[in-house]
Length: 407
Image (cartoon, rainbow, N blue to C red; front, side, top):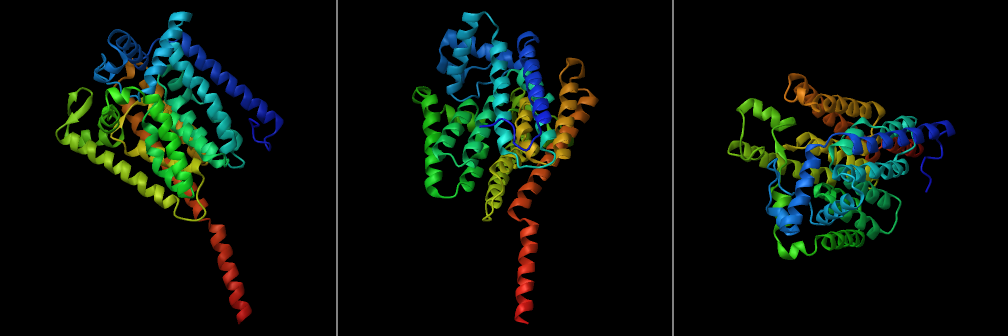
């Protein structure tokens, strides 16, 4: 597989390669030399707790940030492996945590090169992806595994789009769900995009087997952990988007485990927004695949993520990296808007001196609105493919020509 599209000029390919190498180098430098982050500290606590009290006890443990272990069981093996690498190499856990998504970004870039439709602005979209400030900050510094998760999601999309055996795409999707539960949001899109029941059965059986293999034996020891975490976890409420608007309207929430699990009226609001998000994703998945000419699966996944980011009541800053590869399918201006507004938000939110400031709040709303703009732009791309105006005009011309001949 060629890394870069064939129609890109030689100079453009060299520029993209340079940007990709430079961006990866910066991520690796930050991974090793930048200070530890809250997420990296949380993973260190998970590792230490699992070594002292056993791996299965992680699902009953709350860290110093009052956070639960909300990862699939397969990630326990990954954390233990990274812990062994720390012991052998002497390099800190924060480095190995940041290394995984930083290297995964290279793979995601290569896959996106093969998924984007030929267009004039593709070089600029790929350049923005190769050297993306959002990815540099979140994957190179934050210390979470969302970049690794998105690599497997994009790999699954690439395998389906390239008409590889559908079970291979199911394996890739199962690996993504084994990193985080987040890709469950893509299930309706994949289900309705796949052309027949045979492909659907192969895809989801392969996905389920991979997940179960990674979850063994924890599902036997604690069979309720998946449903409890998947259905019960809601991330941090009130710091983003709609939930923040609602807080400003009806007052500050109280939490069962601050800053998680709102109670009272805000618990009802959170639940409504969760069900609304799921319902809208299902409805859009049906709509996008209702026509014979379906939008690209890559675009559909972008629509789903952008919608989720706009409506979700819970938020973590690492969520913003989910849309980075997918928004490249939109027009360049929309891509630039999302990357630009999100970068400003990350810059203002990163240093503690800006925490909770007015400038950070304004930047948050700007970033949130940019997810709506991304949704509308990607939705327009999906609509343009499914209901191509050129096809409609051509059909009208054919009908008019036929009527003239009859006359």
